[in-house]
Amino acid sequence: MRVIKFKTSSGSNSSDEIHVSHKANTAFNPLKQKGGFKILKKPFIYCSGILSCLLVFTMFTSVGCEKLKPVVPTSLPTTTTFLKVEYAGCNNQTEGTKSQRTIEENQNDTIIFDFQNDTLIITVGINYICCAKFNAIQNINDDAISLIMNDTTVSSEEYCRCECNYVFKYYFTNLSHESYEVNAVIKSPDSSVYKQIFQTFNIN
Image 1 (tube, rainbow, N blue to C red):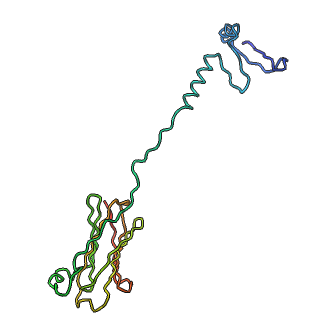
Image 2 (cartoon, one colour; image 1 turned 90 degrees about the horizontal axis):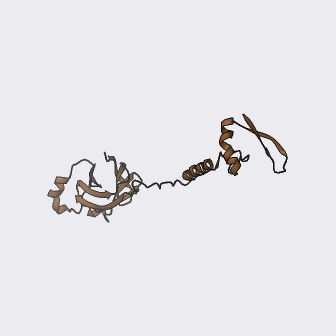
Image 3 (tube, one colour; image 1 turned 90 degrees about the vertical axis):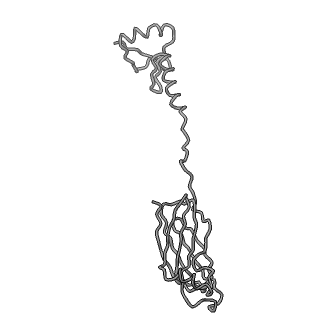
């Protein structure tokens, strides 16, 4: 084993020593004679020859230059969209069409779902006094859908003396949830809630 001493910048001998084996010393002799071998004391990195330094530099460069791949979303978020509402059943019926009303009356209040080709049809059937006029509206709040049927009859004299089933078909598309809480409400002319029914819709 051979001990190599080196000088500091002031020119005095340093007490720091590096121990080099006999085989390593024999390999380094040609480099020392040509001035191609240097031992670096700071910052505690020792490169054994010019080729080793180039290898280390290449490794760090290849790691540092690696590009990050952009993250591409698989799908864009959608918003549930209301399309239209259709009036059926006893809507727009008068006392003169009593035979038609008889077919529609005496049914249970219902909410029926039909989902086809990304379109949800919600059919609401509610029993109410005949000859009423309605303005059907809707409201979407995240995964809750409110179906509101406002009775817009001007005078109580316009009502017929019977009760029949009114049908409202609401169409929605671009569903953003797999499940919805549906609330159907009939409001009297004074805006009070006359009847209210609930139903849950699940795509699967």
